[in-house]
Length: 427
Ligand code: UD1
Image (cartoon, rainbow, N blue to C red; front, side, top):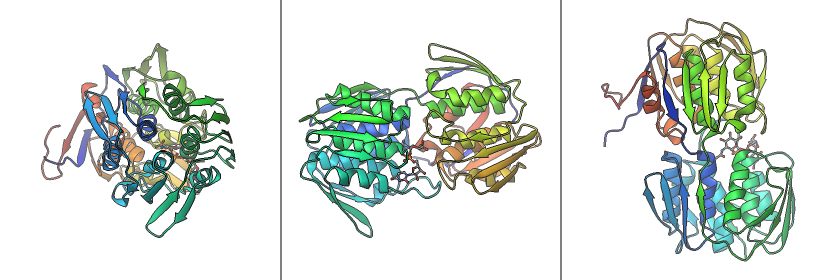
């Protein structure tokens, strides 16, 4: 199979038409991990076929699960998933693999896991994950190359998170659902992906109260039944495509959009001059009048502006005349793609966690390098608003989270193609 590791975009073409939003990566991954907690068959419908999901599937198979796909439905038979080793070869590729600790410990009482890797967007400690697991009774040894953890049975207790973490909240929930007794978790993240995980676990028989709030109360149950769930649409992919319409000053329609989860993003969209109309999951977007800079956008925990849409937004702002500012408040080094946008002629100054963007309508295509998933998608957005051809290398980052961004943009009328870097082959 030929590896297509470059994306080429011919900028300044107008987009129109309609595309449907894929299932959510960040909802699917913890649900796949949770499926380990039922010793039988579970199914996740509408699962995105992206490399992070394939990586998690590989890990589950390595642990003894049997998996298969029927279209976008992923079947996970975890009857014999009794493995306890998760090699660094997997965990180094995907940070969210750390979420497997609780399900493996809950089920198999022991786990040896490589340290998590993934996108480089600053320091990404796992101290809160480990704190939650230790609180509920796990013994964890942090060795040089891997973590070794043991737990007879998780024991319900009180956990107080000093600050919000999506992954650590999910970890605590996964450990608590089959624990002995009751667990109160305070300071929980309220992101939709935490809510979706709780809903999935509830269908398996978990007892969770306070879903969607900062305080979760979980009564441990003896065991979980089979899981069956429709993966919700991906709010970050939807937001990325909204940015595409804005950068290309175009009208497009998105189907299967979680409009309610995008409120803070849509507020900024309106400020830029974007218009939209949303009804039962269909969002008609008019980006033709996008022309206003935004004095300050700060990323924040949900329902604040999502950090995952910070780079795609920056790509739009880079093409709007006037001064905009973005303050990144979740991660400490998430402006990597700004340096690549500068190569295209963007005026972006970074000081600490703040980016000052002096927008220009003279962005020009050139060769760029994706360094992380959302930053890579942002380069595609910047390319849509730039004159001429942009080449984006490092597309393996983009395939971690976008199932068919090139096909979707091509269907909307963009001239976009992939190549192996040695010649230009169409997709
Ligand atoms: C998840 C999402 C990611 C998104 C992020 C914030 C998945 C697979 N990934 O990542 O796309 O950008 O939420 O919405 O769902 N932190 C600690 N200690 C910990 C854990 C986190 O200090 O043990 C810090 C992080 O460094 C960061 C902040 O907490 O500064 C929030 O991170 P967190 O919410 O945990 O993000 P993830 O769950 O890794």
